[in-house]
Amino acid sequence: MSSKGIIKKKTKTNSSDATKKLAEKIKQQALLNQKQDKKEEIQEEKEEIKDDIETTDDSLKFTSFHELNLVPDLLESIDKMKFTKPTPIQSEAIPYGLQGKDLIGLAVTGSGKTAAFAIPILQSLWYQQTPYFALVLAPTRELAYQIKDTFDALGSNMGLKSSCIVGGMDMMDQARDLMRKPHVIVATPGRIMDHLENTKGFNLKNLKYLVMDEADRLLDMDFGPILDKILKILPKQRNTYLFSATMTNKIEKLQRASLNNPIKISVSSKYQTADNLIQSMMLVNDGYKNTILIYLLNEFIGKSIIIFTRTIANCQRTCLLARILGFNSVPLHGQLSQTQRLGSLNKFKSGKSNILIATDVAARGLDIPSVDIVINYDIPTDSKSYIHRVGRTARAGKSGKSISLITQYDLELYLRIEAVLGKKLPKEDNPSKEIIDALHIHVDKATAEAIRQTKELHDKRKESNYRRRDRDDRDREER
Ligand code: AMP
Image (cartoon, rainbow, N blue to C red; front, side, top):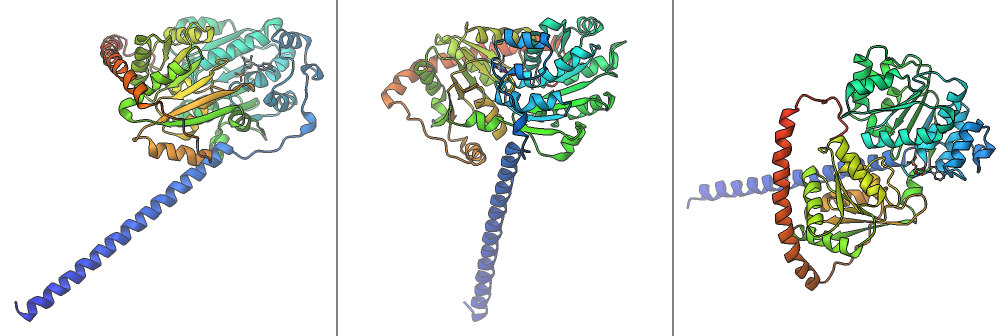
């Protein structure tokens, strides 16, 4: 080889080394950036969840409803409902509500937040019984029904008329209901907007109170455009209450809700995830997820359990699997009809079924008493949903447990949730290999059968959906 050739080769090697070094440097920098982005995102999420808490005046807090100057009709109902003393959110929020202030309440379902906003509204309604006095917006139909029930119970002595206006029900029936001129309307955004646009004689010009329950969800992208439309129509002179388990801090979102010097009250997260909720995780191999789930159901036999899945298909299949193996489970997801959803919920609430298998539709706002255990069959893709899900247990001071199944594919999502929670969750012990192997054979067979039945259901549903395609697609809460 000529000397020229050697020099050429050397230069080439040098330049390829340099390129390699540069590529490595770029990779390192990209990794660093990614890490930084992630850190910032996590911090943002943490801040959103914590929210800024404005301290309220402790001297306004009360310990018995009889201390408040409530009208006798209302006080009687409160006594009848056996609310002997206020919950923390009630003790803080009601005095301000009675003073006519706007409220931002950070509180989970189970904290008594519905009565916290219903009591000031009903007190004010007693003095001025006008139609369409209050509108309560909720993101899901089930939550809307629950809120209406609380209003009905609290307003039973004062001739309260209320309506629940949600998707999936007959528009004409609802129009007739609205013509009865209810004082309080509890609604999902899509359907109430439909009525505001299309039901003759119905308007909210004299509305005095607007409540947004699960407000962070209502203020997000899914409902945003409809909510903007509703807010434009509503009179500016009114009281506005935002209630939520997690509240985003983004000012522009809050401004959209037109609050007037709101008082911020927070009792939820501390109350919720402190001593009485034991959260843990279980590392499982994806292929053994069903087996571990069935093992846990056996372990917790007789307890009331909610199992969360990420998709409707998983929800349906897991529910069938549990049933095939003799567990009394009911599904709750957005592809069920309204009647089916209420049916499942009622069975679970009444104790006829002790296992509810749900997508995130059920994660928010539902008042399901005494849930002993929450199992995250699939962990959620965002940490807020995690908090909502585990918030289904350990309510009103009772103890509760949550277990998240983490497979090899979930690690990144899981670490993110841990980062937002700011703590590591203890690891549950896995059962012995013998136990799992023995169980796995049965579960595998049952899973195959559940998959077959799910497919059958899916085909049937597809056919019937095809027939009623145009119906009712303005309500978006079911996703
Ligand atoms: P909520 O957070 O509004 O969904 O309420 C959760 C549950 O707590 C409901 O079943 C209420 O009836 C109940 N509750 C609300 N306030 C009180 C109270 N002050 N005392 C006892 N139970 C209450």
